[in-house]
Image (cartoon, rainbow, N blue to C red; front, side):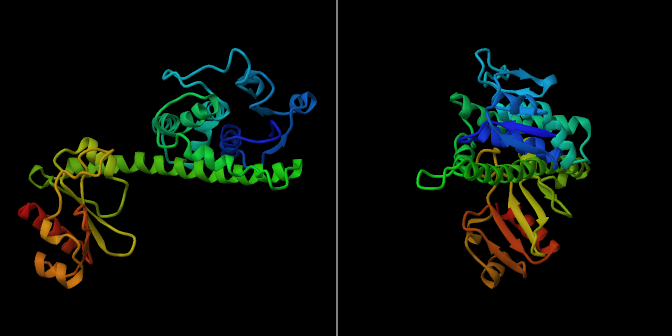
Amino acid sequence: MHVVVHDGAFHSDEVTAVAILRLSTPDLTYARSRRPEIIDAADVVFDVGGKYDADAGRFDHHQIEGAGARPTGVPYASAGLSWRHFGARAIRALEPDLDPDQVSSAYFSIDATFIANIDAVDCGVDVPGPFRFGYSNLIGGFNPGWRDDRSDDAYLAAFERATRFAELAVGNLIRDVADGILGAKIVREIYAATPTADKAILLLESYVPWSSVVTRECPKVQFVVFPDTGGGWRVRAVRKRVDSYASRRELPESWAGLEWQALDAVTGVPGGIFCHRGRFIAGHATREGALALAKRALADG
């Protein structure tokens, strides 16, 4: 597959558009040009050419009629058009374990939280969001500066670096969203199987992403116990809301900031590693010890 984007300074929307397509078509080639004969010879064209025709592989949004908009009102730019037509393919290529419904869920989640913000920046639309300018500014920073070599070759090399960065960023995001979808299914099953009297503590024998699903769907859980990457175990307080650090129940005030023997002396559970001074997480060397800390926190709270 051969892709064409415009030459000169590049932006996050066409960089990300190419990255999305390359996630499922790693051997694609591209050129950067506005010349009609080069555009006409391409399989896919992003952000140039004055036409949106998916069947013909033309994905521009600068024409007077634009390229449509989402139900939220955010218009499509090149990133959104690429995601609209190639995003699900990229998700399936990276996450073959997802079923069709999960692919659809991942697609819409990533569009709403990430891709739409790229399009909004490119189209000059004000929308709130964590990626509002940060990502677009990062991509823009790959352009040569005014004191740098600004030849066509320099821009071509810079575009390649930016596209590879975007490919990693989008690929990581797809992985994280897929992790959350698959992890949530496991967490729901564990929560459902936990006796009602014990639901205040959710025990995960292996780590899966749990925070969002527990906060939204498991109202009885106060603490989650899970293994960490270093071989120990963690006790983590559940947030009141997904967008807040406030906990449903904090770890005891007397534990705050303590480590090792000092923590053990207060908790009475040997093997403690630390308790964050913010009282939202503590560490223990063993599974049994972490469970004991969680039970003690419930009793002391």
